[in-house]
Length: 509
Image (cartoon, rainbow, N blue to C red; front, top):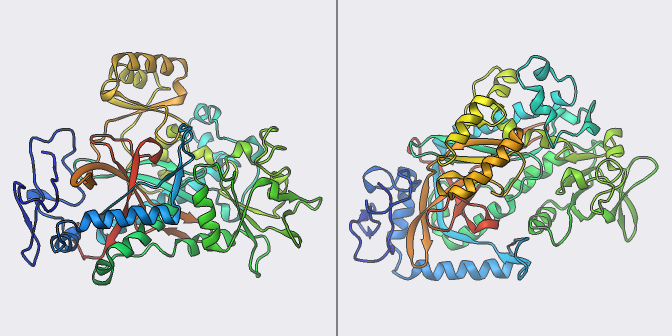
């Protein structure tokens, strides 16, 4: 049975949910609604709010009929005024678009989040041990736990990084882990983003907007904060500085204003008190030290938070035609005069085929079972699994190993027979590059669609930091598919976002 939400203040709803003050909030259960999964993040069995969401529903019940429309208009105006934007490269008409934001938050109980927090930290710890091993002893390959053919086919393994062990043995200092909830309530890891994960600035701005929108909720409810992320990020980066004991010079390396995440680059630099720099602003000296060009001369840089891909990072080591990177940066990093986050080569673990081995990776390095499971997956590189995938393309989601943003994948149940046939040929031509998963009937949450609340699918991207310490955001960026029935939450393909509230309500979920 799906969940359907008519206008929150219409008096024609089929049933009411009553808050503690008995004010009715009309939210209906409509069994005729099709295509939306049975698990809703805010509405539990019997059409009642989940315990963590009860205060929100009590609050909404006290609002006047047009209050949500008025507040949404205020939010849209604030987003435009604040310049919170993202870029769609395929859209030639507009470079920047206002960030799509839904004002109904996603809520989760702290009691449930505590387990997720532990699972995120466990996963990043194991992945960093794995990356360090691949660039050094390769024990996991020699012990035949991780197939050599997967490593040999990795687009993101960088031979230039062999023999390097970064400070603390950490390669992926910032990780964005995508989580989804299935129809039975199980939380799964959908993928790990270890190269240049983005979205955290939108998480922070979503919270700032919501504090202005619902100040009473933040005064009366125990909503755990996310505002400390910039300070935590700075501490993570500062720990990588080769010159310990003094305030390090940190630079955020951006491709420039036309990059889709430029808002985030400039936002985080400002929040941390770091320099925002393009490759042409930096130079590597004869002493293998990275210097920033300033009006008062050259300033030595201790740590680079790079927001460009490996291929463009250093034309001496990678693509010689790159104009975005810094010639000699790899020399400086190898010499230990500069820290880089995320480290070059960290993307070897940011591969959807490698993802399927993460439970074994956790067991191998930590001797633990995964706290958060993977989505069940199949690998096209194995004959028997490939035969199963090809025979069931109409039931599976097939993903290429290294694409991001929801591009290049096949959602079998929604694809045409022609699209499935074309994808089958791609799989046969390059089986190492594809993996498949069953279609997850991911959870929904009420979302303002026009003047009505409607269920929309969503995921969650928490951010995890590691250097000398581990830290995970309390919640993260909830991304929501704004199109009815869609499973694609990426902003580049029509998705939006919500604020994520981790609420301390004891044991409710």
